[in-house]
Amino acid sequence: DADVTQTPRNRITKTGKRIMLECSQTKGHDRMYWYRQDPGLGLRLIYYSFDVKDINKGEISDGYSVSRQAQAKFSLSLESAIPNQTALYFCATSDPWEGAGYTFGSGTRLTVV
Amino acid sequence: GENVEQHPSTLSVQEGDSAVIKCTYSDSASNYFPWYKQELGKRPQLIIDIRSNVGEKKDQRIAVTLNKTAKHFSLHITETQPEDSAVYFCAASNSWDSGGGADGLTFGKGTHLIIQP
Image 1: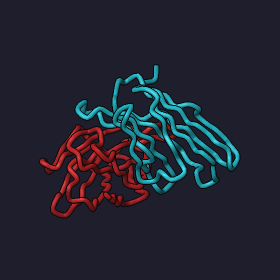
Image 2: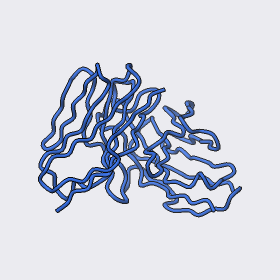
Image 3: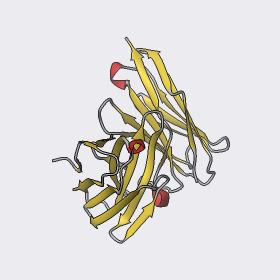
């Protein structure tokens, strides 16, 4: 079983629609992150959470919201999708002392038309 | 906040030659510098990291060097092989731990490494 699972893998949606991307993990990690990857721009942090009651904005949080439903689940929502939110979205988890860095999910490719 | 610059954006080398990718960072409080490799269509994976209390770290064919005074660090790959073809990302964090600390990891824009046969 995959340790960090993202759903859906691919999604095409229309401008103005609300969409939710989901992430679940079996690593038992408290820290979870949402990053966005665009060609030539690398990975940019959208939101992160260190536990269920802790949610923090990242570099590019405008237009996004998150929900940490449980230690294992961290969802990203686009309230009203716009075309420049077309990107590859990665969820990641980490443990500060495992020494293994981030464990990324397989990514969700989102296209807003 | 932290800013990480990565160069070059594309690097093409002959199989068997060495490859060097360089990154600079802006926050002198940064202490943790990982490198991630992303193969085509796959998720990024940690390949090596270094903390600010050491200047160099090596793991088989890959090594990372850090110059805290100049605020730059580099990835060195020797005896390159076809399976080294990928996009490589450097990152920085002001935490000592590998989990990215209080603000997460700040990534560079990536280097597409192409190994020519």
